Picture 1 (spheres, rainbow, N blue to C red):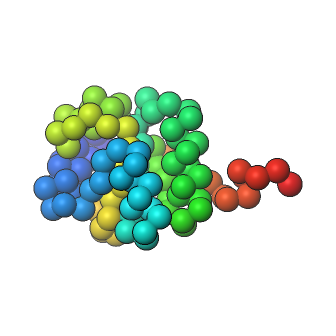
Picture 2: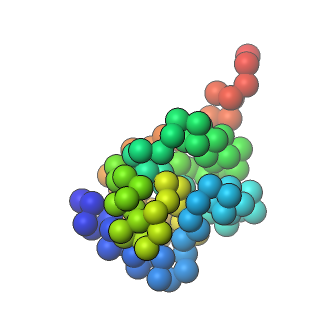
Picture 3: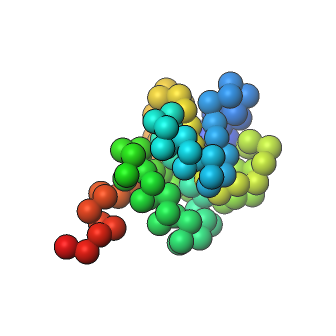
Length: 111
């Protein structure tokens, strides 16, 4: 599955439908450009929580790819732990088989 996903990620990157890194992914979510956010399996808990919050705030689903940052780097040409996909078709295809870690915005506030 990783090889299939790697090829899809490579095509997505070449098509210009991918934003790499925390800041660009958050920006893509904030302006409504991101259709899905994908994280590496070895992303820090703090970074994952921050992306889950950003996704919940903006209605963007967040997934764990089951790939390390190094494996993502091999697929897209840059080692990164966070990818925002701006095309609905690519996002849907990458999400197949990935772990959904999306959050409800209420999870981040005390009741």
